[in-house]
Image 1 (cartoon, helix red, strand yellow):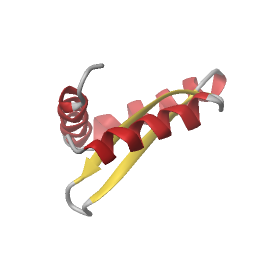
Image 2 (cartoon, rainbow, N blue to C red):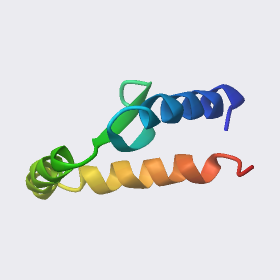
Image 3 (cartoon, one colour):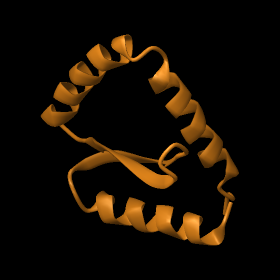
Length: 81
């Protein structure tokens, strides 16, 4: 993975760690050729977001699973320090 991408991911993770964000996923949108970040809220917002996503995941025809596989591939490519 390119060093600039690894650095950008670290910056995003540091930025969101200071906010009320439980976790962040970073992925590459191949269709639009851009980096995307998925922020996951903490606390009560997290439960509402999960309910919302559960409904959308069932209706998206497998897009969520494909995106998760892409994110996992990106994470696997990040060098471990």
